[in-house]
Length: 113
Image (cartoon, rainbow, N blue to C red; front, side, top):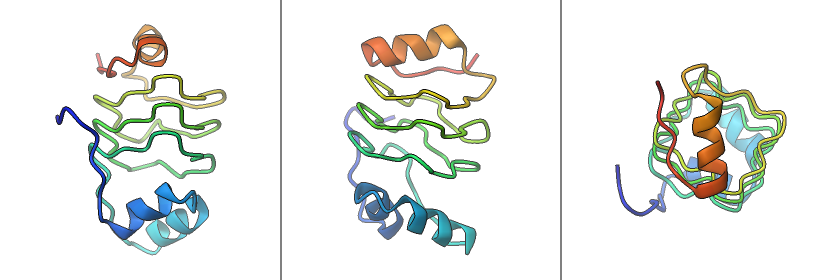
């Protein structure tokens, strides 16, 4: 775990930073790899992200629009969700509701049980 979010030079990461979520999804479906662990995904509109299989460990989602994303098959261990919009999201069953609430309200990192 890093203290600061990472800005990656990965082309797939840059697609997310520029809100090109549909292009990101299409390239992933074609098998393109991406390394998002510990990256800064703050203040982004990520609606429509196909998160299944993504390793989002230690990512920062502060104030991002995540509405409707299905995170059930993604790794969110250590992610921070301060003030993120999560209406309609599915989260892994290992992530307790009180843990997510603390992350949303206080910016703590989520821990799985």
